[in-house]
Length: 581
Image (cartoon, rainbow, N blue to C red):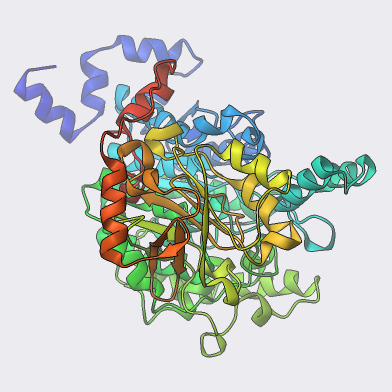
């Protein structure tokens, strides 16, 4: 459409587009709509429902509730689906290389769905690692009146365990220390219901980020996926998107620099996944906002680590919701947050907190928590009793001049500083085999490279980190560095997102076996401090790394096809968010 008059009317009223092309209404009637439906506000309901994993299998139920709410408020909902894939299903084979790439694919498809029809509003429904940030990125691109519905939390396993213990089970089976009967007991109980995994991994973290950003209704992140509350909140989202459309409140009114900062503060307090360092910068990029990675580190130096939630703490995510969820964390940190930011309710964050105090939400949750015999202060530690400040740090040095990321809240105090000889691997598979075969010397600094965004799509290293943490000799003595990323369930001194990555000619490509590596989390540094087992000056280390870099040629990836090839050829640095340029 090129006529300026039509373009102006299209921006003022999406129904104008429908008027100038009657076939669009005919096509809708062909789906069973009637003449009244085509004159109502159109709301796009996007979910990632599918038989793909527990985090998505139930989302059609939530979508149905959303549609009921939209209909009751006078709108017409249309359901669209782009199924996501679980990191857990991709472990142990090349499928893991596609997992981060799916974020870009889902965001692109939702953008397409949201752009071809003239929608009046958007509801996004997802639970897990890459679909939640993909939906946030698409929301930023489309800039419609938007509500996000988190898919909620899975029930805990026996004795409040979570699915993340599968790493130890896998290692036990491979090393012969666990029999098939024991493995079967985990298989039967590791994922006892639908919903996101029961720890503060990337799925739980990103659900929390949607609420911390103001795009999800208060108290909805990590709501138990099997309880009625999540159905009611999904229906409420249908009502709310219609109200936002009437008020003209769009995603860009909610997703701002101030709301991003609020989200980073909450991320620090809950012990969020290091993958938040990929997804929030990628969202900021879509919003045209500069989000420097150093801002994460600055905030983590000030914010108390409140939540005692696995893997950094003791309890599963369901108990986090019972203890008050994100609203409770926001209450506890209200003096650090911008309470004037606009939210999806059409009210400010400060106004939302006042409403939720009188709603009975906290009291109901504490009643459920009492069923477990757990004190709420054991789940959410009062600020004045917090012993840990922050949860994630940005480290820089001659290995990672642009930066790297470590979740220090999951690192033992005696491993916050460590120096050891490098053991270098050009793939996770090779490193994992060495750990499982027990050929790694305690005290080593393992380096896995060529696993960054351009190297291999930036797979997570969960199989290897769990193999290390379940080996008594290595768990308390060994560091892992990589230009890849980690699962949100990762424990121990594991430093990821090292940038520039090896494929881009970063210094990590030129470290050799026997070089001495110093990890210093308190001082936020990661450096080569010795060559071939001999300590040297920073100047000498720089000289040797530069000398080794002469004639560097990236690895050839001619056999890659389709979106995987496009992503690995065009991905931004991990420190920038690893989005596809």
